[in-house]
Length: 167
Image (cartoon, rainbow, N blue to C red):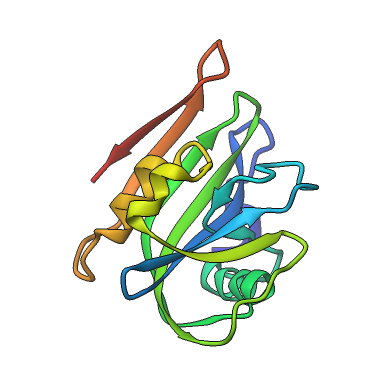
């Protein structure tokens, strides 16, 4: 199909693609404590990830972000789910959520924050990014055979985040 037939119309809902990666090592998961200078989630824990740059596919973006933010590589990343974040604006966020096992490298801090291995039992005592409380246990508990989940989040009138997940 030629480019002119792709159906790109600026009046349609658009999304910015991002990746969210969870790396496991035994009973630990790698999270990133956001740098205090970050505009988004400063001093809060999140998975590793970021924007998909022009010319990249989702997997290449995830591998790049993982290396840039932590110095690590995995034994392979697999798609666990997708999350559409409805920002209430004409442009939203499409997050591709991936998981992989630690393969090699020593964790190193980056301008994005400080990576840290944490156990699931430590999560309740950490300042997590809002939707991680539901997403992280789901992703960590997924078997290799499980199909990806589909999720959508949106903000209500009081700016409270709501997350809807479908299997």
